[in-house]
Amino acid sequence: MLVCFIPGPQKTGVLVEFSNLAFHFIAPGDLSDEEFDDVLQFLHERIQKHEKSEIQLLRYLNESLKR
Image (cartoon, rainbow, N blue to C red; front, top):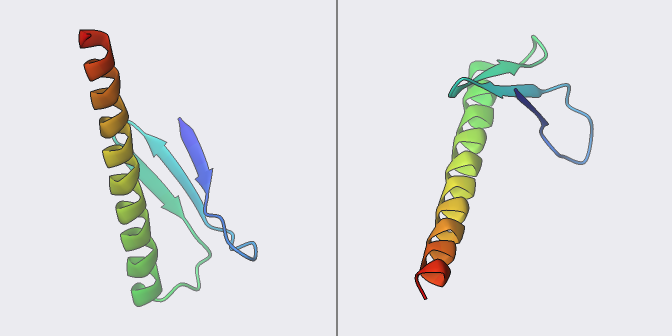
């Protein structure tokens, strides 16, 4: 299980746990629906960027090993 804390200028109390191709989101109970959606959108975009980066690294490795 991977546990991530969202970096920021101040402690937010937001905790994200990734496990079994899903993530569990724990946040203070005072987030509005819009704030909650914004955090989930941020996480989704961050994960997609990371996946693209890792896929590109695998492609580079594959090309290097072919030579």
